[in-house]
Image (cartoon, rainbow, N blue to C red; front, side, top):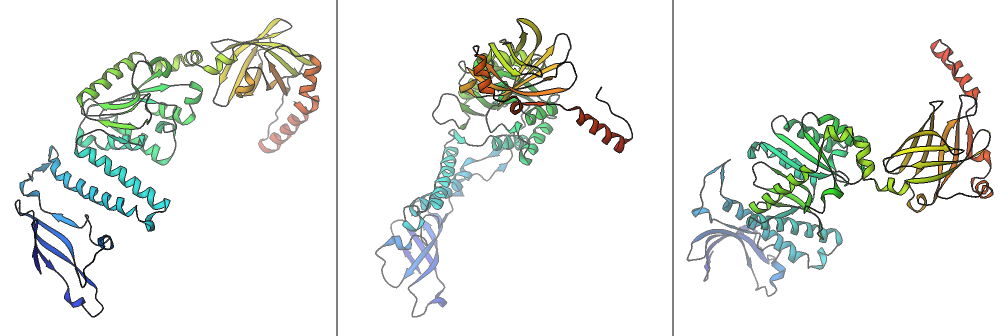
Length: 460
């Protein structure tokens, strides 16, 4: 069957063996010329019906913009290799995606596809279509996942042949791929380490709070790559007001930059190719690098550096009154925490211990070294912002009076002195808040060691 109109000249092919008295329509394929002037060969679905269909929406699932092939490539270059790819070939596939997106947009308005499950899928596909639309126009587009960005960057080395990678990355965010031990994160870390044998890699890690940044997994990564990758550290509060991004990467090819901007309503990664934007990030990188420290320098001065920007330490610094049951009496002493993390302990207005405070994400510990006995006094407490500014409970581990056994006691820190009657009321009964190490435990352990290993163990 052949037909034509002002735009098309089509020959349609149908399987007439399917026709019987119940047949309402036949679906076939039309081959011909679209656009009489340009004479573009096309193939499309066609429908042959017994009766005229007034409501074309009934046919939409069978006959729509996705069911079309056109041979526009007659004027295209067919040259294709690693160094020369004509984007116009890609455009036709982007148009296919666009046509499918148009189909999904129309389907999303129909009641039978109106569930949340389906609507969300349509919306996600629309976002993908939007990305390819920007690719077609050579415009910046966004990406959501840091892991994917780095994965593609590593895999693109064979094509890009870059010599250097420059990266600035906050380590306090949940998507810090270097602070995870998942199988995918570990594979990515190993791939990056392997790439560092061919490419110079520099990473500036941006620190917001040391206590929230240096978990076990991240320390493992640093120790693994410190000799292959140039690692630097910069503090967020020292750079964020001077640059537009503290989360970006680029290479020495200067042909793109992936960046997440500061102070924007929708902080996602965007990839840019404009030379101006690439050069802007190069300048920001140099500025950040100038305010950074090398891995070795940072690790050497880590405690002092981290304490200087530690908001929790600033809250805790100053004098605190300590109340805790000892082995003989209730202590009423004083602890002084300094801005640099050093701590002094005073008993009866005499300095008897000195040490440091170590802040972690949820807890802090004070380690005090007795000036005379050289034994440790340990104070542990949780971070409860609404309490640590005034008063809070602590756990104290110390030595019992006149012997070498330990004592674990729950006590109080307070910004101002508390009347002793009130202290007794708060702490409650001594047996409820204090545990004394029993010598019988060590005797039992000694017997076990003799039975199991054949030698005697003594606590003395």
